[in-house]
Length: 291
Ligand code: ADP
Ligand code: MG
Image 1 (tube, rainbow, N blue to C red):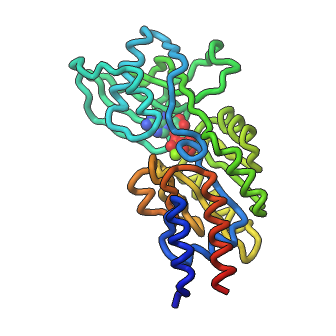
Image 2: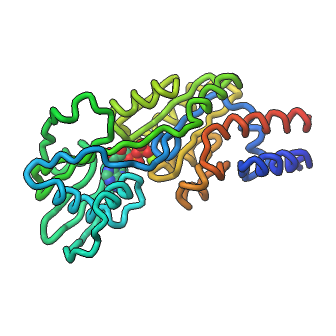
Image 3: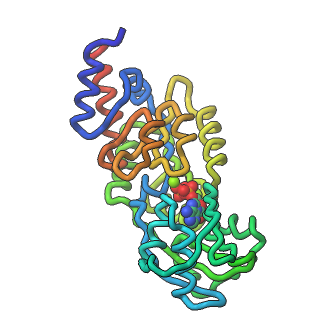
């Protein structure tokens, strides 16, 4: 049976905006040695703005038009930014066969042409050669490439911002004795390095597919000290499988997807990564009382 104070702990946590789905996670949280983060929507706001449009063989407006229409139904934060940048949805173009590929991007038929929007891996998949861009040099941003009928058509540079409490979130985990803080991202190396450096994370891995994230979590589970636990924190867009694999899966509740909230063991109602340290402190306090 579960001691009553466990429920007291859950109540105390929920008053702090932390939903813990069961007393057993108190123990898991208290023993946490490794915290693994997703980037977009977890450590960063997940709200991208368009910084630059670099078309290759059309005008900038036409490139944005194609990107916005391909992204019509995607729930990815990148899609929202591209739709925002081309708000004119009333033009009568024909969009068919939309297919979203997690960790790559989206493709669709637009007025009979196959248009692909995504990262370099996506371009590689459809045989489009990414042209290097002098205008992008030294710019830290997420680059969204576009190909039309298998040939390169240009890219849109977008950027996100780290959450205001993300740096403190990492520092407070260190103060609680968490040994290893890791970020896993599908975004490219440059962005991964910038965010990891800014936040003082121990480790980061970029350019990952959803399946690669699962593999990293499995490795980190093997490497954690005996008797300790691993937490994964995500917003659930493309990361529900990793949330389920961790000893404790923590999801962002406000921006996060329903699937993530469902798959998670702990939900942070206000999306603040600094609440992870709060959850660990509440758990340790509750266990001290319970024992
Ligand atoms: P993260 O690890 O940053 O949360 P995801 O796994 O969700 O990222 O996506 C990884 C990468 O896949 C993105 O950085 C982007 O390059 C590409 N991608 C995923 N979904 C989309 C989309 N809807 N449109 C364009 N690119 C996408
Ligand atoms: Mg994600």
